[in-house]
Each structure stands twice: as structure tokens, then as C-alpha cells.
Length: 305
Image (cartoon, rainbow, N blue to C red; front, side, top):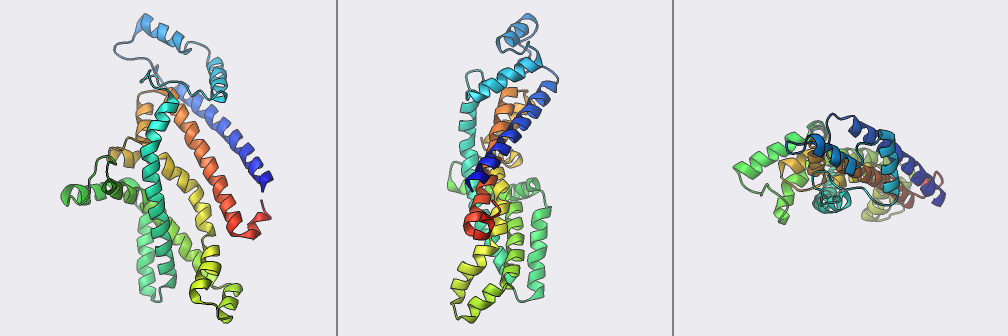
């Protein structure tokens, strides 16, 4: 397993290098200078570009940036010169992390319960209703769900607040909007996997031995039925913890997604680069962690690692 982790970390570092390279040269290909504004033109612009090294050849800038990254320096924000990119990530990751964890909890609880309920439903009509609901959940874009929830429950009915994350009630609408798709996906995975596991011989044997149904459910059914869910949750957790651009903008949440859009629209290259690297690293860590969890739950998978 240690060999697997080291191998995946090596692949992850290579992936991060490729991601960093592509993002760096794409930002450099954007028209205009990140320092350019109505108040900064001509000679002053040239001096500022010289100060930040933007007048040097692109390859030299790239090499300097890689060296700085290795020393833990992600640079400073061009639009907020008194703020480093690392500080900006720490500041904006807090709200995104809290919202992501709430959404993750809703996704696992509601998704698994809905999947089991659908799998155990006896009526084909009820199963059809469940399937229709889950299909709708994975088909409707989250910005439409977010708008509907905001207008109906936030503006018209005023059941929940809609700006920021200052109280627990503020989390309800953005968490539901952000989790609408993953809840539906987890429910569908759970339902399919649950039905497959229930047909296995070891479940039939456990029932024949007279083991309590609840024990069979926990030790034999759910333990194996949730493996696809754990695998799916790897990249999903990374997505939830790095922020949803649409959700954070609609609900005025000062998180990473909102800051990332601001940085792109204002040509704040260092912020774009730093957040891209951070998100990429988080996705790699979450994916490796999901694989390790699967191996812990199912001993058969340890042989493949």
C-alpha cells in the first residue's frame, strides 16, 4: 500500500507540474497586463512590470515561478499588493470549507438513505418515482436549482437568509443547491450497488445462518454496497471543498470560487495560478484518500494497490 501511495503521489506531482505549466502559459496568453488600469499607463506601467519581473521573457518568468513554488512562495496579488496569494487562499478557503463540509454531510446522509429506500421499494411505481427524481437531480444544472431555492425560499417565502454564512440557517439553501447533483448521483450509485450486493451468496448465507437482519445490513451489505460511493466521493469532496463558483456568487459567499472568478476577470494571474495549484493538489489528495478508504473497507482491493 505504501508503494501505491508513493506511486500516486509521484503521478500527482507530475500532474500538478503539467497543470501549472498549462495554466501559466494560458494566463500569459491573455491580452493586456495585470497591472494595467486607468491610473497606471506608460512609463509607470513599465516600471511596475520591471518590479514584478513581467518584462522578462516568458520562459524566464516560468522558471522563476517554479523556483518560488518549491520554496512555498505563491507570490502576491497584483490587485491587492498587500496580500499574498497564500493568505488569500487561507482567508477564502474557510467559508468554502465550511459550506463544503455541510454539503458533504447532506450528500452522504440523504444520498445513501434515498438509495437504500429506492432499492428496498417493493412497488415498481414507487421505484419509478424515485428514478424520475434522481434523473431530474443529475440533469438540472446547479445554478438553476440555486436560483429556484433563492427566489422561492429566500425571497418570496423568506424561510431562509440568502446572503453570506453568518448563521447556521444561512447554510441551508447554498448547501442544498450545491449538493443537489451529488446527492442524486450518490443515491443512484447506492441503489444499484445495494441491489447487486443483496444478490450475492454471502448475503444469502448470512441470512440462512439466522444472523439478525440489521447485522447483515451493516456488516455485509452496506460495507460492500458503499464502495462505489466512496470511490465517487473522492473527486466530489475535492469539488465541494474548492468551492462552487455559481453558488458562492449567487449567495454572496466570500469563498474560493467567488475569489477565483474575480481574479480571472481582473487578470490577477498570481491568484489564478495559486488557486489552480491548490485545487489541483486537493483533488489529488482526495482521490488517493478515497482509494485508501476503499482498500480499508474491502480487503480484496488491497491486492490491487
